[in-house]
Length: 177
Ligand code: SF4
Image 1 (tube, rainbow, N blue to C red):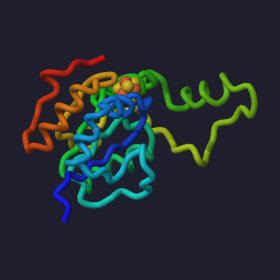
Image 2 (tube, helix red, strand yellow; image 1 turned 90 degrees about the vertical axis):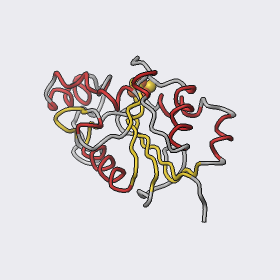
Image 3 (cartoon, rainbow, N blue to C red; image 1 turned 30 degrees about the vertical axis):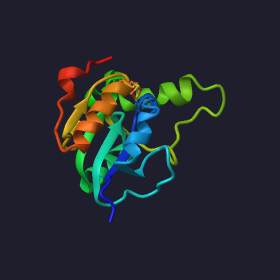
Image 4 (tube, helix red, strand yellow; image 1 turned 45 degrees about the vertical axis):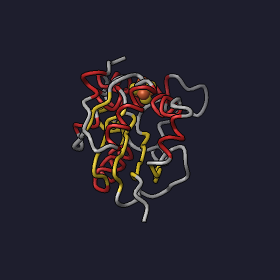
């Protein structure tokens, strides 16, 4: 049986910049590959939420019903959950829409600024929640990693600490923005 840490990464309402920063670990990814088994991520083709996840990194705010469903499902199957980047930690950019009603947001996106087919989608596009929320408002979060995005050095440090069985506090060494 493998002793590798089962790692998942999740992309909610974010720009994918935090995942790009993860990839910026470059050759250190090879070092991590000896210790980590990636079981679900936007950078692979996993469709289901796998069982027995040791650590899940969540990028992005919880903005839609689909985001909420994913956050709950990964929390249920994960020993540890990390809010990965400012959008996950505080709501950051996605929460800028919170000063408007959802209908105003839909109208701005799909009617006022559309050149053709001016209509609000009622299917396929996941329904928005009333507010974009930081991850800790909907599920328990064990580790908060700030940064927009967190740089590769701090991601590597935090992952290395967690793999070693230590609980880092990235809020003390990371920074927002
Ligand atoms: S924290 Fe910054 S880099 Fe990460 S998803 Fe949000 S906007 Fe993008």
